[in-house]
Image (cartoon, rainbow, N blue to C red; front, side, top):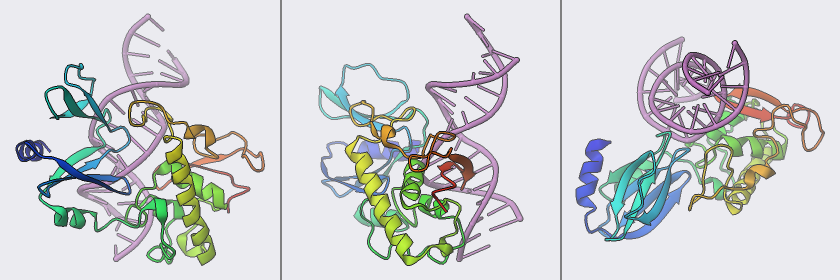
Amino acid sequence: MAGASRQAKRLLLGAHVREIVRHGKQLALVGADGSVLVVQLGMTGSFGVVPASAPCEPHTHIIWTLDRLRELRFVDPRRFGGVTWLKDRHALMARWSHLGPDALALPSGWSAPIAASRRAIKAALLDQRAVAGVGNIYADEALSMVGLAPERPCSRLTARQFEALGQAIGAVMRSALASGGSTIRTYRRMGGGAGTFQASLRVYGRAGQPCVTCARPLESALVAGRTTVWCRSCQS
DNA sequence: ACAGCTCCCTGCATGC
DNA sequence: TGCATGCAGGGAGCTG
């Protein structure tokens, strides 16, 4: 990304951010000249406006000078995030065209592209082409809320179950957002504080602990390459 | 075409 | 105490 950022550095000189848009986990800063900075925070990426005199914390990858006194800094210890510059909004639309509907407000019928698939429902939820914005924690939580086993093939869900799952995804994401997210290890909300949603988690991170509904110990296994926790008794 | 696996990267927890 | 090892996850890219 070095070449791209060098180009962005020059093109962003004197630029003003006109608008900030989001779809799923993707963020875009639209400049007054129409160019776009696409930001992917990954797991550990964050932005912060800090005094220009502040020492650089470790893993600061990009610094934008806002004025004489302030800087916007992009910090990402695990480097799963990234920043890309695009020429205009058309390029942004092309880049985002493969993303599914946003998880915060799924339209009815959102499940049509995956309804006949034989893959596990958990794998489909993590696929940003199907639903944009669901990560590992919230996939497990939503499946727990509606009593669906993560390994269940999509094709074995009824339309009513898909509808309930869509509602649950929106509910759990909005609730987590209101709590500032889930700080399990390293995640930090804007400003550096910790989120509090981890205290409300029904299954994620609670393998072996009692199910909040039936008190039986929660199962843990790898599904779609990600740690997955669920109750074998309540979810089928 | 589709689905599953591997890798990237770093910090933290665990075990010896 | 200090070192080695394993695990965590989003998404690109590869494989079957």
